[in-house]
Image (cartoon, rainbow, N blue to C red; front, side):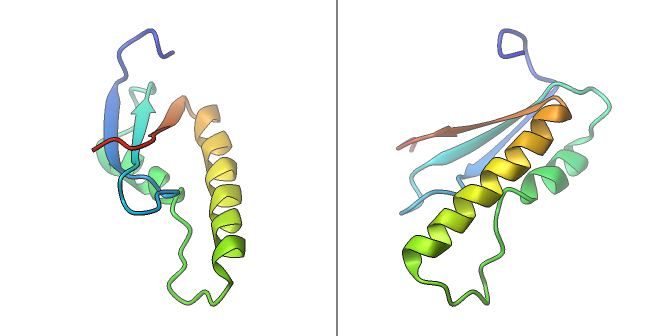
Length: 88
């Protein structure tokens, strides 16, 4: 799929970023998915941590687990996620 142009692409801060310098790119190859639907689907990549009191390392590991799980689900829907480290 990466050798063809995606139907939609969105980007933002990586859900695994420390310091806000890593970027997330979400590439959708399903023409039936709208931009709002893609935003909704990709929002699952971000673990809601607003009320979490876990230690830093444990919380980061949970963020990675969540990201990998959602990424796998998105891949089945012809949506690829890429994290570019240090992209500014």
